[in-house]
Amino acid sequence: MKNLNVFEIATSGWNEENFQLMTNLTEEQIRSVIQPMVDKEREDDIVLGNDEYVQALQDRYKNKIVVMFDGFELIQF
Image (cartoon, rainbow, N blue to C red; front, side, top):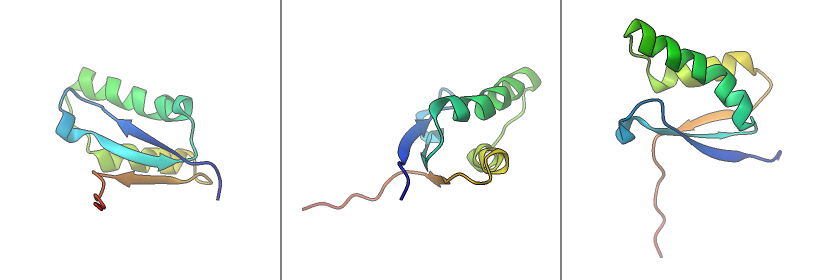
């Protein structure tokens, strides 16, 4: 499998709205898609869901791995 990174994405000041991405995208690639969306959201006073950010990444980078997580399961020993 290709090298994968896990990023936590925060698009607002609310921690409970953060989500995690497992992807082979770089931080710069993620920022190039999500930053303009966040800027538009703030300028036009609209609300975008996390799934819309992820879908935009998947649409832009069709041959890359982009998987969203909303929290992780804990395996405790």
